[in-house]
Image 1 (tube, rainbow, N blue to C red):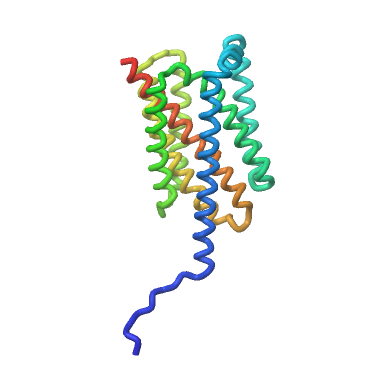
Image 2 (cartoon, helix red, strand yellow; image 1 turned 120 degrees about the vertical axis):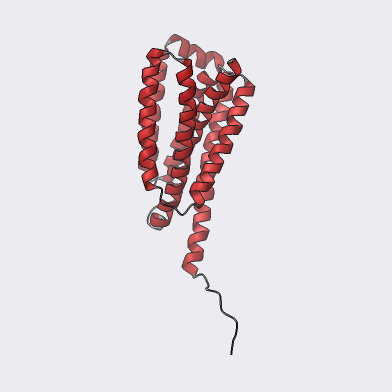
Length: 240
């Protein structure tokens, strides 16, 4: 008689699902990292080589400059999401174009801060984002309700920030920066968890590559916002 208990074996479907999930996550985070790299390079070039053109255009027509950026970014976000599962190649191209435009826009704000502030903000943002993304990717908990609360908090933060444009309170802006980091850190975890669950549920019904690009866009926005809020925090601290 066999006294050894046989370990339950994973079926081919389970193994294939795990392999597919790893491939999906690798692509999603790879696209997101590439988008961040493109934005960083464009921001650097905009603050150095292209500075006369970019900053000259902004100084001459600041409102029009911002309007073009806002409209183009919303159009690109919509284009990426619409084409993600239909035409992943087009969606990827739009993601890279979005990263270019966002990098040029960020350069106007980043030029106000020192290299030490920017470096500290980037390292801090990478650490926070990486930690929350890992938790979101590996957690088995249901985070669906968390997203609702985070979006409500984000809307509240946006409204309060608009009000503070009239108050011009540096202390309130400084506090809002910490709140912004917390909100987008939570969104990073939620988005990572949501995209993993979406792949497990719909990965065999839609383009996994297109789904990875959609996730990369969401995570890119989370990371960039964390970074920009850290820039404000470190920049405010350096002025004290």
